[in-house]
Each structure stands twice: as structure tokens, then as C-alpha cells.
Image (cartoon, rainbow, N blue to C red; front, top):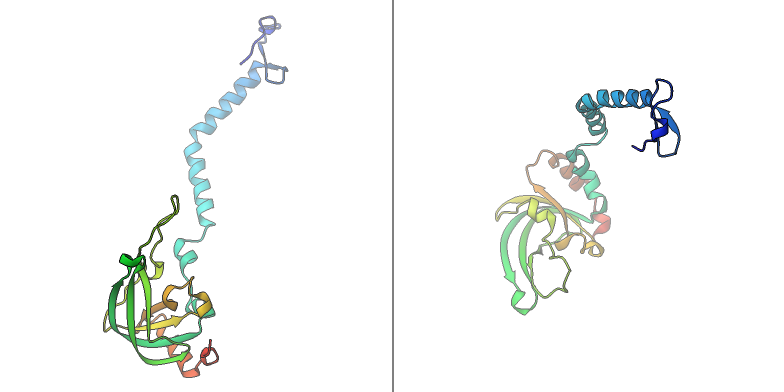
Length: 199
């Protein structure tokens, strides 16, 4: 606060000079200070109210991250119900490759373009330029797990989307998952992906 000695008292009223070089009565400053004290005392209440309003306007992570089977299948070229016959790791890192997980399937029924086998990287080899981040395995296969002899629904991606969907797998579900079983059974009976068999 900047003060002027000559303006400290004018009659019985004290003043001070603000940043704009304007003379302001001190009782105004005191009023603002007291109001700010009231606000500070109730700050926690205001923060809670604001947080409630703000958080209620944001969808939950499950609402943001969850996709319906229809949305997930929008770019698919094939659907299959298959049993996992084998899962093997193939380590190509000694020759500058990756550690691959190779999965072989026995397809029970399907529609469109389907795969009998696929592979995806579990770990990465080779050298990277300084500052480049370490590649990560496909998120799908870190969140979900395939097991030998397990039966699953698979949605297959087109060849042009292999970079986005390593192994050519958009997603997979347990064969008896009630969230997808009736719908996928219906799609197979309709041969929904028949037109994509040559893609």
C-alpha cells in the first residue's frame, strides 16, 4: 500500500493512494477487506459447491471409455466365434525384432474376413533414437487376456488398420459374455460382414 503523508488525514477521514494514483477512503478498503474475510471463511463451502456442479457436468470415465458393440464393430470387416488352440511367444529381438505373441484359432463360425492366426508385440527390440519413448504393447492385450482352449468372439480389422489394431484384432469378448452374445449371434445368422470377405 502506498500512502501520502499529506493525505493521511483529511478532517477525521483517512485515505490512501491506490495503483491508479487515486485517493480512496480507508473505510472502503476496510469494507472490501471484511467482505474478503467473509468469503475466505466460506471458501471451503464455495469450493465444495463448485466441485459438485463441475464434476456433475463431466461424464464418468466408464461413460467416456465404454463403447457399445455396435460402435466397436463400425469399422470391422469380420466377426468370428473361435477357440484359442495355441499361444506361443516368438522372440525376434536377438535379430533386431520384437517379442511376439502368436495366437492360433479354430474358427467355429464367422462372417466376413476372418483370421485363423494372428500375432501382436509383447515387447520391443531394436535401437531407438535418444528421446524417443519406449513403445508399449497393444492396450487391448494388456487389459484383456486370451487363454488356450478359451472360446471368444473376435472382431477383425481391415488390412489398412493394422497399425491401429496390431494383429488385426479390434476387440474380443468371452463366448458367453451376455453383453455381446445375443447381438453377435444375430449378426452371424444375418452374415452381416459377408460383403467384407475380400477386403
